[in-house]
Figure: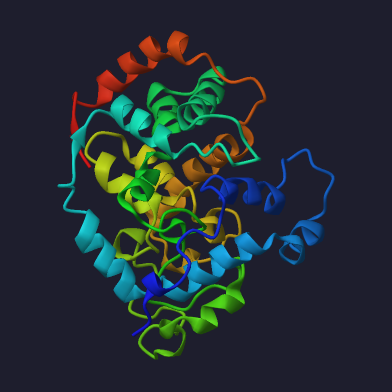
Length: 289
């Protein structure tokens, strides 16, 4: 059995580099870059990004995902409030990261403020605020390739539209006849609730918040990194009717997730009372993590 602990655990300088890499793959809607140009981005990527995806694609097996679900989804590691979790996540800030000087709280507030500026519902604003809180997995010692990165179903064939698809050839599930057909262990139109996704901050946070936020918000959080589906329109053969309807919301959220960064940091102390009041409308003072 392959051992993910025997290899480099943190190939990126910082988890947020994955989001910066996405901007190269999916430039802003106003960009003049053609689809064929940005789909060739792989040849230009820094070695740390390629190493990240090499590890992610090698080790994200069905068995690995099942193991991580058993390990983390009992939600018995800690209890804390949502703003407290944001402050906890803030310890991920890395002064050596050359790509951003923002703290994690400032990044989350930027996203939420962009949503708020557009007059979206309050639950949508709150989703923007908390969507990355699952990255606290890094503070539990999880390697970055098991926290961030594009997500995808496990237990069936890996789509050719997943970035660095060829790296999956080192994954044991690639040659396992139970898992390497189009549907694998699933059935056509089974619905994503019946599909196991690769492990990361999206799936973890979904289980933390699913009892508190509306279904639209749940989908935004659970699938905002599922780029092969919401940007590449693949895996829809696994969707049921609800998935098709809810992915319109996932796509709406994506514009704020990718394109809300601004040079000027938000005023955290000025905004904190508004967001603490918003959090209190949906969450108790402490929740299980």
